[in-house]
Length: 135
Image 1 (tube, rainbow, N blue to C red):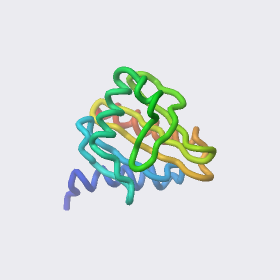
Image 2: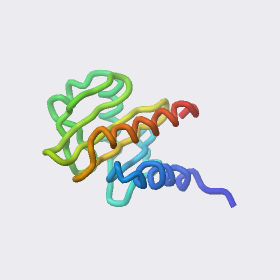
Image 3: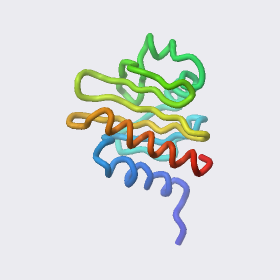
């Protein structure tokens, strides 16, 4: 029995990201905004994905002014790696890591008890894996 494309991507979210316990919520979207997989209750909109892709591939001025908006939360932009990723923080205990691959946008949020660098490392490692495989 073969698994569907949606099930395959959901396994990446559930097994490769959430099971690490370094990522609290995660989503994988196509660069067109289509949701490929997401954790329960994490609703990133097509518009939010489009804005993130535009900022990562171009100018992050908008994110510097308005922050990184994913789901129903906003994060202050901490740093960016043009063409690759943006990182944000909300308060002292939560943040977001957004990484672009050739065909997808990976969004990972961390919460209380998770070190930002640990979440970022998990998200970056997943992005590198997908890029290696042409995604």
